[in-house]
Amino acid sequence: MTASTPGTGALVQLQGIHKYFGDLHVLKGIDLEVEAGTVLVVIGPSGSGKSTLLRTINLLEEPTMGKVIFDGVEITDIRTNLDELRTNIGIVFQAFNLFPHKKIIDNVTIALRKVRKLDEAEATERAMAELKRVGMDHKAQNYPSQLSGGQQQRIAIARALAMRPKLMLFDEVTSALDPELVKEVLDAMKALAQEGMTMVVVTHEMGFAREVGSRLLVMDDGKIVEDGVPREIFENPREERTKSFLSHVL
Amino acid sequence: MTRPAGGFQAWLDEQTKLSLAAVLAGAAGILVLIVGSAIVFTTGGLTPYESIIKTSHSGAQTAVLFLTLLLGAIGIALGFSVYRRMPTKAARETAISGGALGVQAAALAGLFLWVRDIEKFDLLVRQNFSFEILGEIAPEFLNGGKNTVLLAAGGELLGIILGLVLAMLVLSKRAVVRAPARAYINFFRGTPLIWQLSFIYAGIILTSRLPISVYQAGIFVLGLNAGAYSAEIFRAGIQSIERGQIEAARSLGMTYLQAMRYIILPQAFRRVIPPLTNEFIILIKDTSLIVFLGLTEGQRELFGIGRDAYSETFNATPYIGSVLGYLAITLPLIRAVTALERKLRSGLTGIVGM
Image (tube, one colour):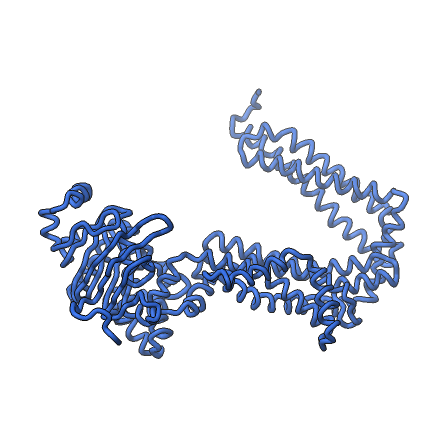
């Protein structure tokens, strides 16, 4: 494949991204590079465009303007095979989005078999390994509705990881969980970060941002207002909008 | 109100018994009417029709009717007079039920008493209840029932395939793809089925000398029509699946068609089973319209057989045969849909169970 933008070698590059929903200007010129191995945490008030930014990276939201480059390939180019490219980017949603009509094991194997074209045995083996990693292998024969939110979310993580992605996106994955279930999901994410996975995490969990994040973005009104090391931003925010936001959430 | 000796509980029991008496009287009225009449008429014989007339005026049937009237009257009087005094909600409902059942029993018995004495009663019985005619054409009705089911099932099968394709087209993000599918659906929903049958058969199939029988043409047009209705059902079913499902599927690298096939459609299918079955029931009844195309003897369906027999005998009893055939097919289906809807609503089936 041709490298569209040589030089930086960043895994993800966003260049001049604008996104409109009708008249609503949601992203107002985002430029961002994410190096492999980074755990990038994105925080900011609701409506600031965090989730839209995240969903732009795998083109669930198509930017109105601007380029998205992943692993050296411009994915906003319509000639790019988006389906193939997406197998390299895992995403976990706020609402889990497990397939309710399929057993847990089939939730994980379906894409391995139909997209990665693994045979049944191979797919099952890999799926069980991923489920074991998040501690859910004992629920392989259950249906999603029989499990708690935290369990479902850990399975959603396993489902994404089974594809062996180069990048994992997390879109407010603990926001729909009861408070006592949040930790088990964050622990799974933390373990993943420690293994060196490149992650972009949109979250309201400031503890996680500070402890696990290697880089922090603060967004407001469709723009990145602050970008730096989490601890430094938390302790010493430079921007007025960051201070105001942090004072509300900390 | 003065309370009889024995305390509150005894008084309460006393009151509640009245509501029970009311509902028993009302229910007994209905029971006597149905079971009593059934026994009396079966003993009297249903054929020839003269025996029905005779039995209607028999002493036994008169006794059944007046007993029903009496029980109904008791139910009405007791139920509606005591329900306000009932100590519990359950007892009040029981009393009201007794009154309502009484009204039904009395009304039915009264209707029967009136009808059997009107001038044209004998004629009505002869024209509608000459069951000896049905006996003669029973084999034809069996064959007709088979044809009705085949027409409906063939049409529905074609309709489901067509409807699925149309639904996918209508859901396209491209207006140029949506427009023709929408036009097709609106046309077939917006014109009478009898026109579609007549025009497509006479105007297209006959004119072009296509080697297609009336029967096959019927299945074909019923399918075209059912396709339009099924398309709307499928479209609604697919749209009812949460957006996150297709997002999750596409994010795993599935193509649009893979996501539809493995993720969206299996879920949508479960949700559309009740409306699709309703559509099927309507289709079963609509097969009767094929009679206007003119069928050969062996191809006739339930309605056609009834109609032909009517024009031979000028007796309407064959229509009774047709309706019994339709009900034999549709009632079990209606029951099945109701049960299914209840199950889906209660969440017992959910997405998981079925």
